[in-house]
Image (tube, rainbow, N blue to C red; front, side, top):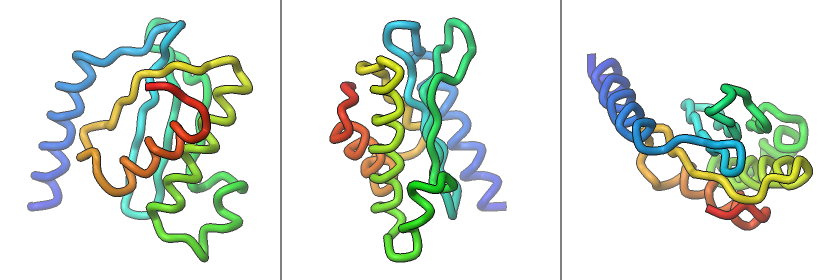
Length: 121
């Protein structure tokens, strides 16, 4: 019951955020999803509905070092990886969408990693 309640509350927060934050062609949205085990990041152009760049802890670049890292370190690596892929596609500025999660822990670490990687938001 408690899990269902927290999931519903997160989805409500996510809808509130999504009403204000939208990605355009010039400034796409960096969307984050966090599960108990993995973290996923996508850069999305909402005007076309296309995912431009994606990275997660399931990618081989991150997964190879995942055994020795903590989850926050994995999230930072995913942030750097998504930034690297975005810069390769010519994307520098994005809008950050925390997906209803608190800006803390793994979400904050991913954001810091993507900023270190060269993204601006």
